[in-house]
Length: 165
Image (cartoon, rainbow, N blue to C red):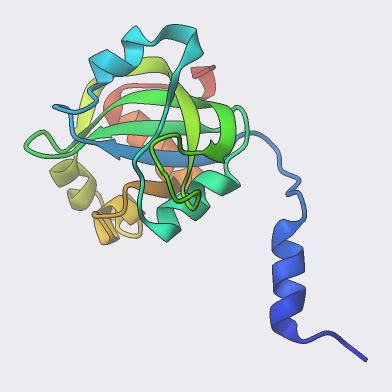
């Protein structure tokens, strides 16, 4: 007898995913709490991305693998992508969580975005109309498609082929 579809999907979700190259993400932070300059100061060791208390964002971090790349986004008044980070430790318990429910990854700074990409510029670009940042701007850790990655890098003055963690 065949397994119910829900159980089959759950089992499939737990299987390792084979892929070519990194996946891409966007990490949002209040610059007063954790700025790009603070992230860069952590050096190669990186910093745990703690404090995320949203199940979708937590699940996004659980899906991350070593070497995945992400945009570092300042929220608040700035509302702009200012840097690129690399996942340097996969999902592990968030040390600031006493319940054991929440996870975090560690990220390290890779490079600055020469021309920060504002939320307004992303919203004005038709190529980014489906981007999570444009559609669901409140989610703190978001997936980014390879096409969106390339376009934001282009807007920010970076060649995505030259970005290395």
